[in-house]
Amino acid sequence: MLKDITLGQYLPLNSPLHRMDPRTKILGLILLLVGIFTVEGSIGYALMIAFTLFVVLLSRVPLKMYVRGLKPLWFIIVFTGLLNLFLTPGTTIYVNGYSLHMTYEGAVLAVKMAIRLILLIISSAVLTYTTSPISLTDGIEKLLYPFTKIGLPAHELAMMMSIAIRFIPTLIEETEKISKAQQARGADFGSGGIIQRAKALVPMLVPLFISAFRRADELAVAMESRCYRGGTGRTRLHPIHFRLLDLWTGVVLVSLIGVIIALRFV
Amino acid sequence: MGITIRNLEHIYMEGSPFETKSLSGINLEIQDGEFVGLIGHTGSGKSTLIQHLNGLLKPQKGEIIVNGISTLDKDADLKKLRSEVGLVFQYPEHQLFEETVYKDVAFGPKNQGLSEDEVRARVTEALHYVGLDESMFDKSPFELSGGQKRRVAIAGVLAMRPKTLILDEPAAGLDPASREEILTQIRALYLNSKMTVILVSHSMEDVARIAGRIIVMNQGKIDMDGKVAEVFGEAERLRAMGLDVPQVSRLVKALKERGIPIDENIYTIEKAKAAIMLLMKDKREA
Image (cartoon, rainbow over all chains, first blue to last red; front, side, top):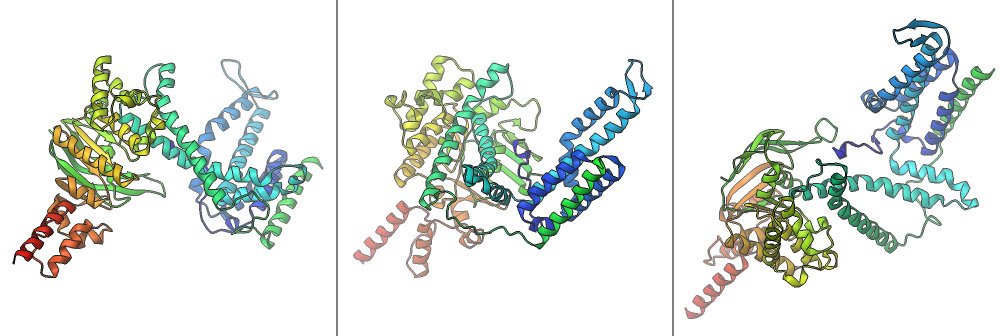
């Protein structure tokens, strides 16, 4: 049921990617996405696929997990594939009874788009599988830091993100508990028309909101009583470091994307 | 009719890396009118077990028959089952949602499809049971004290007039006075009605005082099942599970070991007091 939702699907393993600075991984993902959307030609695609496979293997995350991550998107991949296949103008290679033209260009485009979508999902999954939510927000905070000069509250944004991520499982658990308690009193969430169903949610939503506000209040008091006053002057238990590994990753990524762009435009 | 559980098994998050066996090989028979204390430390499977008794969780293996209804049966009338087996969750005050105390307690009986008059009669009865009078009916449940909120929430289940009442840690997090009050009310309720009561707790004192039978759970299994004296007689075994016997019975045992002739099967402060007073009196007279 609700607990099947996986958000922040971090897997605590030990791989070079897990040890990497989150900033490298975030910027690396952005670079890779640029690559995925500019790549052209078979050499370019081969390079991108090979690199993604290399990263996947390097992450030591079981391949099964990546396949599972793709599952909810099969429909979109197949659907866009079909649209491309039949709606791209070009040399017709097959016509069916309903005068739908399958074109050679369409077939090529369909395969390309499918590869791009799959690479996109897998490379984002690499980031979430290898980076804990906490170090992800730490990384974002550090990356946004230069913008504090123009008034962007980088620390506050990152803190809000961490708190939100932290409370998702708690709220899911709470929802299940309250819904069970109301079901024990004969509440029925599954039947009746739309209006009736919406009304049936009241006994669940009211306690849920109350508890969310209570938790927020308690958390605020707990933070204040430990002298939390925002980011200024705060040090970290686990400071993030840009190391040699990160430097090399950067060099490899920048040259890869350079080659991809060169292949496309030169 | 009672409750029959056969070979019940429950695996939490089956097929994921977080898979844990929370119940295995549970066989249990609870007769009508029993007062059962269910004890075990956190994670022993108590809460999972009780959620099976009103069909909130379905047996993954094995079966449960409550008052002749098998919860596995596809046509089982779950609404009927849930009004027969009242389940009060831990911290039940967190589920209050209505504008007034009256309306909140009426939620259960209204879901049972009762007439307005019948609902009123049941709500009034339930609130009286837990010691709240008419002056409270129109208050918002959110302006009550912690103990009062807890009692309103318990009344919300009682108003459905269940045949079996299950309470999960009803006294947790309350001050000693409210704690005492709630346990006394549960005891009175049990004596005045023909309800079967299952009290889940990790406070040995509470259970020893009011339950007739004690079931001890450990690591998803039933480890002991018997009368209060039988279970608390095995202090070592309980301690090995991270549980303990009531403080009073430790005191009584220590006295016994020093050669003082006191009955070993004493589990409540009142009885211990009476026994010690008697001993003192004998000594003075001797």
